[in-house]
Image (cartoon, rainbow, N blue to C red):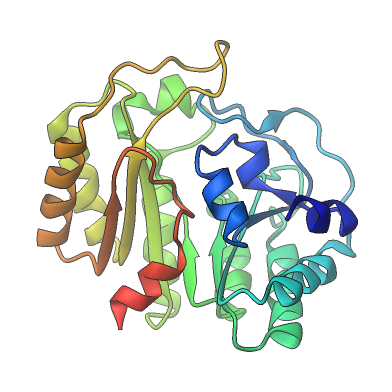
Length: 264
């Protein structure tokens, strides 16, 4: 996997965000491709991706991602990106080029686009919706009361609105979101996020333990028990989510193909 990524000059969020499941996924031929570089314009305190001034867009990247998907014979692929607030549409058109390239080279592969909020630019969201990935994912990450501390450039209601707009634009596309626990949130706040996501039409949910990427990132406030994760899954499923993965090492893209399988 590492050789393939190096040969095609591709980035993965698995590497850049120090995902704890990287060994399992890479050994199984799975990866979440990170497009538009590896420097983010946002300053989230929980994320291991580098922050700063991003470089130029590599227009050949979508074709190389598609080639990797073909070589790996992936049944399902997740495409995500750094947040590019410096671009007019936040890089939405690069998502579309990537989806289109994969459709041409690997027609049977299902696609999940894990998108930023695009600063709630309707045109940008519509561009991605019109590309018709099977899943559009946008993570709320945490409860609203913690946004100022860990997501100062994001807005909780804006993230919910992204999911609602996607569903309104095309109800056939599955929507998905993810939540980290252990940042200092209360149980009632977590349950309120579940409710808000369902009100926005969100179909799938991932819930995992926050692990600080380094000593300079936001610290872990609590380690949540496996039993609590099971409890949260049951509460979420009662609200009508089609599939929920909830466990300490769950991440948004972990075993991503299972969400579509469970929805059928």
